[in-house]
Length: 297
Ligand SMILES: Nc1ncnc2c1ncn2[C@@H]1O[C@H](COP(=O)(O)OP(=O)(O)O)[C@@H](O)[C@H]1O
Ligand SMILES: [Mg+2]
Image 1: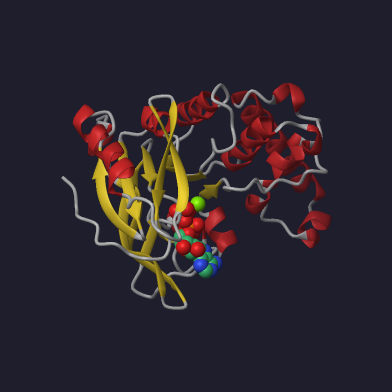
Image 2: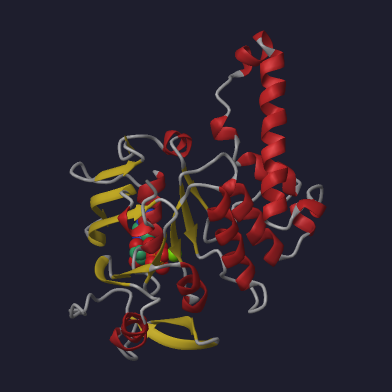
């Protein structure tokens, strides 16, 4: 029996994730889950803790003992980062983490190396198995490059490519190796208005070909809301609201929060921008002081 997406059980689940640095609370008891084939938007002002949360999931930052992170019934929170990647966690980075002196293909293949179980002795003992594994990896890399519209430039060096293309290479790298959870950290940031929809298309295509759960941090709300049916709002490390952006009222509420709830000009503010209705709107928020945020909805 085929289950409707809303009835499917969560493949990815996070319970009680908190994080502090030297007494500064960055994340305060975050709980969320994502179903297979679901895209969940993680939104909030700069400094809200969004990237820190992805770092806790991917294993860059440790989480406290009572936290529990599971992906497809595998407990991730005690595993080192490379074993989380092997368990199916894949991510892009807010600042690109590509090797500029290498080709597009080499960078995409990098995403696959965590799944290559053989060490150098194994390769010497069974060279045919290593060659076969490499052939399979290259086949999958070309499949992903095709999906991302990068097949024609597979041999180009990354240092010679424009930023818009590199963002797509980073996403292609994250898609190789059959991930179960894709973590996107502002994949459209730095892209022109015309280049951004391509990111949405790539995510949509990936979802039709693979069984994936997607957690997507984005400031371009038009873009992420076009793919996500659920949005979670983080502010000063707190999960303060959740809504369905395809419901007009809930979408307005989410946008209004991000526009209005952030305090006005105050000393020490950082300026942040959101793209709403095709226009870039500037709002401001505090980084240091924790204002009392009323819960919405
Ligand atoms: N390694 C770290 N050491 C100290 N503070 C950090 C570290 N990583 C993040 N933070 C702090 O955590 C807060 C949230 O950061 P971040 O998750 O990058 O925000 P954003 O929502 O913009 O992605 C910020 O105040 C940031 O300075
Ligand atoms: Mg960030």
